Image (spheres, helix red, strand yellow):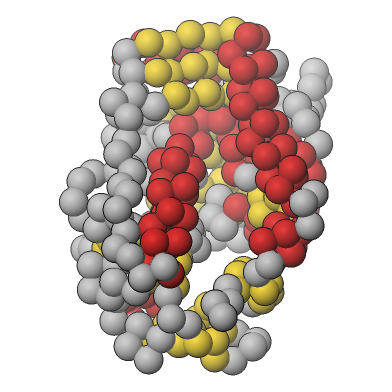
Length: 339
């Protein structure tokens, strides 16, 4: 008889796409939570509330922090990336890393309310949404002063010029200062190029790093430490192990670390896991679409849409984003109710 276990540090999963909207007050904090305990119960899966600290792909064992060793025949890894703010920017008590997202949410509850000068470091879609969300945290008087440091790569690298123009215009409308230079912390001073930046709170949205334990355990990894997987999300060195999301890197093609890709790769991974558990070879592969839809909340009831060369802005985009986000969460709630 086959048994499955879900190893995870919390009985809830926070959907990162709804965090900026929660910060700006567009929906309550609990709106973006998925109940993993109920999902595991509905699927007949054992829930182990713990963290992986080491993995041995040869002996097929996982060492956990509290429960000791867990044994497996096949493993599927989707632990996300790890924070790297201190390593990249420098250590500072004002620094809050977006990764992991659950800890970030907890820290924002404790620390954002008293901060009046907030700096967001990172010029990607996540940094943009957080800057807008934080700017609108307190409506009207008392709104915090927001500075965004996008890095030398510039604002929204990889997006079209029309989207970037829309975001720049909205940053200006909301009086958010933008620096397109690298940032670092030197002797407790935050620098943006040659400019010293005053900050009560520094939010790092600079992307994730790779956890240490996959490489330490002997799994094949890329040059940055992310688990190397093939077209079927299978480890290139140990085919009984699969990985997806920010902790993995496809070696057959380029797939960016982005939530939209992780979500679409999930059903492919599930199909391939069912195949190998039935003694068959995995057949399915996730192929990114030519264009992906990105919806960037501006924190004030509007949003900016990006789809390939097309862009749009307005309240209808915000309504579309809210509908997509709520539908996504509702799907998991419906599965939980089957328990």
